[in-house]
Length: 420
Image 1: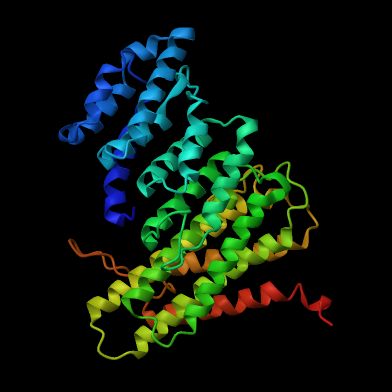
Image 2: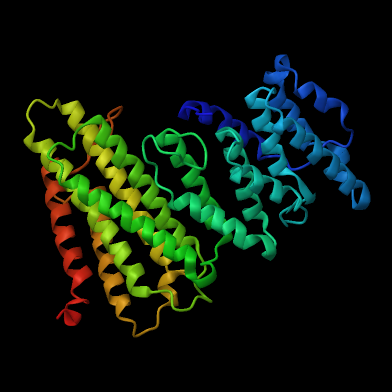
């Protein structure tokens, strides 16, 4: 079943709404029969909230709680698997499965996810004929388990599930996620959500496979940027949308690298990690520099449109560069590298440290320019007027070209001695 992005957006709001509660209803199964009635579809989100916030369940422990959880899981699975039930109700049932907990939060400690729910969620997500909306609901539940802690016996399976999702590119007309084709924006939600799961687990994975996969994804996106930069007409709606989605995904992949714990990692491939960060930043400068150049050269573009183009470029550049900084140091540009970050895992004499310092210095200069311009202009402080950027498209083009040139030298100079 193919669904449009706005449909997923509607049900995703329900997911956010449900995340506030963590408990189930003590009395079953009478209320669940009403969930299946199509006339009650609009009421199901509220029923789900009440189910998750039931006081009887909060106070239940031991065998009583286990029986309640077992009965509730069984009833929800029945609803989710019934193809005659309204899709939104099936989606909500799947969401609730992901919210079930064995132990409530207390004393500042997070709740403990109901472990029996995880195999079911994984099964639904990997089921070839399951509708996409059920798969997405299951994925949200799996990510929540990742945040609350997954048993070691299940963790590798979940990591593989996340990595497969992250690494699978959307191809128009081809089967994605072992089912009917999805629309590009909808599939990106799956991939971004899977990155959330990897961030929650924080592990580099067995044989560093989490890092390896993320580096592959980043390199692929950087190559896409390079290919698009050669297009003589970047300023189309389609190209803008493609570059926006690619920037968001590449940025989150870079940020996810910064969420991992490198303190116990071995043979991580520091040169490859450094190259990926440098290449992504350079590719971001190149494609936005090309867009800025075409904006300046193309006649007939109105000033308001040029202002919008400039704003979008700045947003994309900041999103990507700040994510790269986080990927390197697990901290913001103004902060210090945190313990367990990629940067602090490097030996004091590691040659990659120097290359990363150059990259960070270039990002710092670029960030200062995006905020302050070249320092020769004063900001407009008039009331009720939006703040303007303190630079023009031409100036942005030139700064990005200079940054790209420096990064190109940084990326390849360490490899020159090995060239025959």
